[in-house]
Amino acid sequence: MGGDRGEQTRPGWAASTSAPPSPLGAWDLLGLANRRLSVVLGLLLLVAVAASRVAAFPASIWDQDEAYLGLAVTDFDPAANQPHPPWFPLWVAAGKLAAPLAREPARGLQVVSAAAGVWTLFPLVALLAIWIRRELAVAAAVLYLLLPGPWFLAGRAFADTAATCLLLLAGAWWLRPDPDRPTLAKGALAAGLCLLVRPQHLLAVVGMAAFGRLGARSRGDRAAVAVPLFGVLAAGGIATALAAGGVAPLWRALLIHSRYQVDGLAAVDHGLAASGIARSLIRPELAVLWIVLTAIGAAAWHRRRRAVGSPWPLLLGGLAPVLVTTQWLADPARARYALPLLALTAGLVAIGLAACIGRRAAAAVMAAAAAASLVVGLPQALRSRTAVSPAVAALHAAASETAASGGAVVVERTLRSFADYLASTGELRSPLITDFSVEIGAVEPPPPATTVAVFPDGRGGFVAASEPAVTFRCDVPWVRRLESERFLDVTVTSGAQVIRAPTRW
Image (cartoon, rainbow, N blue to C red):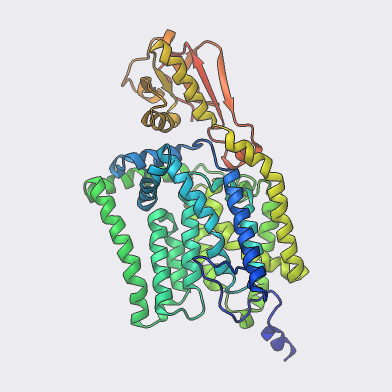
């Protein structure tokens, strides 16, 4: 009997019976008795998160996928892998809408992503407040937003930050207790938009819908989900097919890219130290702590499920599909892929801390951790704000040198998207050749006297001889850690003798 009463006792970390705040935005985030104080504190938190995004807003693109997306904003050509499958149609459309406000295509995507990184505060608090106390939900959300990964990657041209925001928005509506039809429809609309921004979240959307018990509802409730969800997806799919010239070109591009992805996944590193979670937290020890607290939180929630509600809609509906998608269907070493995983476990971390040290102490510890991340990361954020990526800096140097000589720029194949992007913005006007084109005999090696070669560290095997080289390096530690060691050291060499030698992969 005593054990049963313990199961029914509401734990101190559990949410009150009042409704969670609006996922679209609620100034009264903390839900304090003094509403004015609650609104002021909520505004201050929002300003702090926004200021962190401004501080870390990058000066250039850093990854080849950002270059592809920027090129797609200018010319959306899904059949020609611009961008690569699954084509991110709504994200490209957002870039087109933001393009008039930015000086270059990728810049518009960066602005939209940074704004989504700020607004994530609201749907994440709304989702977590379904199960845990409002102050814990706010502390967990702010901690997540000020972790190095979510913070520094928010201003990038990737779709991950915006898609995470929309996924949380869908969950905040769908996983509420007994949602009405308008709430189900809003969740479906958010889920559809999420899939058009980043279709890789399909498993999580299906899981949240299934474990939110939508399938057990009335026919009218199911229609409230199906009509907006499939309507949005149909609109996006038709627009993408029209841009590609039909379904057949899309299918061919998808098959080619799928084979490339499968081959790439066979060689990825599944170790914890190299994982996206560890990179987002910078140190593997912090990743271990996060995982342990998540496990403690899940166990504590399961023990009190009769009083709080079942954890399975979140654990199996949202977290498990995201875990499968990010760890086994994609490269687990990419920090940006870990964003939804960290967001969905932030509440479990809060529960784990509360179970160990109490609710008030847990909120204080999370606030202190967020403040510590802000203090340690701010100097690096300000450095990254003014630092041009090594790839862009190297190509700028190559452009300057060949502008005077009239020579060609030979780029290693993984840098071709950067070069094409800079050419599209008018920053690189020299003739462009890739090492791959020389390797297969599509073009002859250009004359060494006027040739400039550009290649990442360890990939300059196509240059047999050259004059002294200059290497551009990233010297911001957090940025190096978050970038998965890609495009962080790029060399420019003039007087390059290019040969038909395969690049070492």
